[in-house]
Length: 493
Image (cartoon, rainbow, N blue to C red; front, side, top):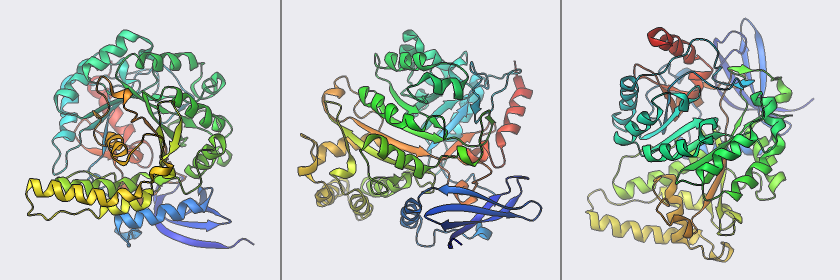
């Protein structure tokens, strides 16, 4: 009989009825599982991570970011999870789409459609930009297929004029098959395509999207390379369908590293429309992603080279103190997103950041940066420079790519915060290219965790200005259903 150890407690929902129920996370035979118990439907279990070594690393980061008592007591969980400031706001511009993917978390349906009017979008953008005390200036337009909105370009232009510093679109890429449209998007202020990109094999698209789309994806990327736009490739990964595409997708990203800034892997969630088998055998988790990426590329170690997104909180906290600024930190739960980062040299050769940077020590030291509150601007700057010099010994020049210095690395990493960095006319000659590979595991009823929901940093904006966590909008309470019904009632076409 296998030994089982209790790791944490939280609250979840019953996969059968959706009622809130107690949940525990346990470790058994080197894997972690979430178990729930519903009085009406009995116990349920779902694998969370296929290798518990990653679980323990993520738990350490939760303690660093949220404090030693970061395991929230179930009874302390609040119903109001809209108070936390988002790092990224999402606005669905329309529910119309020109695809009918067998896998679609939004479950776009044929029939009635809506298009948000400009004034409504303006109010929704204002709910982010004017939020206090911490505004959100990062926006993603989504849908449906948002580029089908007849006023998509004016909407992008409006976001730029309202001061949004990062404007991206979640898209299937179909409209970007036109170079003219791509250039007009750039002129309007669009910065990044969050591009659905499931692999380098058309059979994958036939299964997941219902048609062969590889050529259209390649054309969209080719057109982007004629502009100053950037692309994040977004594969939905399903076990038994396209796990083997992680390596080929990364190699494609390397070939276009001047414009492809990253790969955002999304394990399929059993929410919305899932027209392929989605039982336990089709599950794919973040440990699977990290292990498979290492096997297919030979570029990463597990779990040493993989860090949660919330690790960057230590970086932004320290930098914010040096600048005397109040700044939103990416303090999501560590179990939401895991990734790694590569420096790419002028020959498109990737080197994992942890090869030449003691990243954990660097982040811890950056979090300790401090300038006296009463310090003037000059003293603050001098003190900051002195402390940054002290942490430069985390950088190992003898193991770094040729020509890369600590200061050049820091300037390259500025792109995490300031999307204008490296986008000047001759940016690509400076050797600051970098590609992140990360997975974001959105939840469904089988792995729902209210602690993660409360820490969400990606939130949808409703037409009345509320901010709803991503996983509570698409699964959990499924706010999407009520919100889209209201939009259709107000002006479906």
